[in-house]
Image (tube, rainbow, N blue to C red; front, side):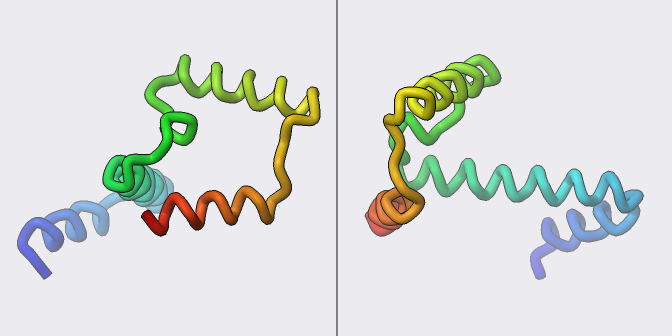
Length: 85
């Protein structure tokens, strides 16, 4: 284990359980953000700000109301294609 990883581990070990869970959630977010930037994800999948999230959620709700949606199988197939690139 590298020195940096050991230092991070030691810090997390001293945190209360609730806070260490939040740290783990943040690390998962960072991993996801890194992967999304590395695969050059479509802009529809990247949330750039709180306002962008709200806009995307509103667009998604409008699409759902109008029936402009895909099946879960179609969604997973498209995600698989994106990740394969």
